[in-house]
Image 1 (cartoon, rainbow, N blue to C red):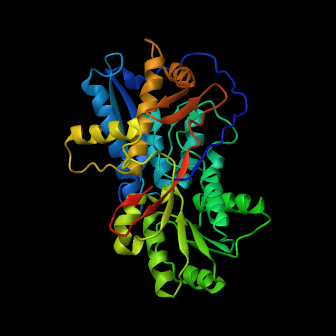
Image 2: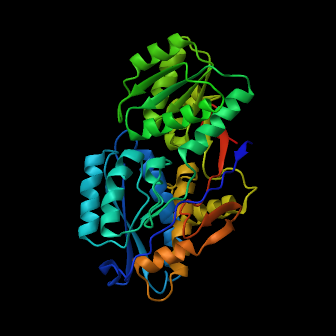
Image 3: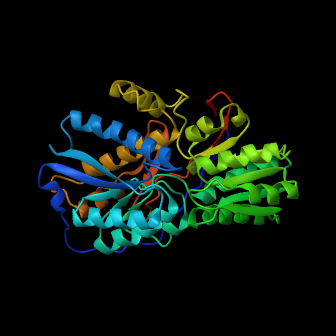
Length: 377
């Protein structure tokens, strides 16, 4: 197992005067809004994250909620398209939800975050590692996962340690793909290296023929993929059919289990970087807790995988912030509560929030698909 930790502090926060209490609490509920892909080529990312978060929130609600208020996670489908995400966010703002939670993807989150900031609505745990959502520092944005820079740095370190320096990049042609590409360039640049080739795929597309032609012709030792599971699976199959015998590395947003399901036996040897502990390895208490929670949920629809684990951890951190927010719950007291978490371990998953640090973790490790639908870490 390879692990990389990196700690950093953001710039100073600007204190906001006054208390902003959402009407969404008035009916005895703390209402969150989640815009994500629940249909289309990236659907499993939204579905699995939502399921994991709901497992935790349902547990909290069954125990009486927070301050006798139930947590309700409302979802709207954006199909991983920014325009639809913007419309969903407008609806959540009009409904005065307490916070926006678990948005899936970089291009969608980049549309939603400015809307949240304008209304001073907390934007919690987006499923993206793009630096553009973290810099400049915002008082209202909180991130659970490591950045794409962290993930690509570990991938490049692993490849170059193995003597593989001819690295190509297959990336989604939007803000997400370019964020990952920037991370690869940054990591290679530290070693005075550059990608030997680059090629793109459009978001929500599996048209990879030209990308395969471009990258296979360059003869790379490995291809780093910055995309969602449908496109990445299509590229892997087509590249191998074209005679490519190198290795494939993906960042976590690909959706590990979804990628494994898409590839089947063709997934053997494909590597994915992870930003949460393995739900399949019971060595950490959080993995055992999550497995027990999924079992207790009793739903065949809920899968224990990396995406649902991230949703579960995001819900756990959010709820800890609620508990620390005090009896007079407001958006501002939630922010204070989250910042008050400080540095601690959530069952072996180290987190750290503070007044000038809203990125909980920089945990990254590598996993490998086995070709039989499983993942080895």
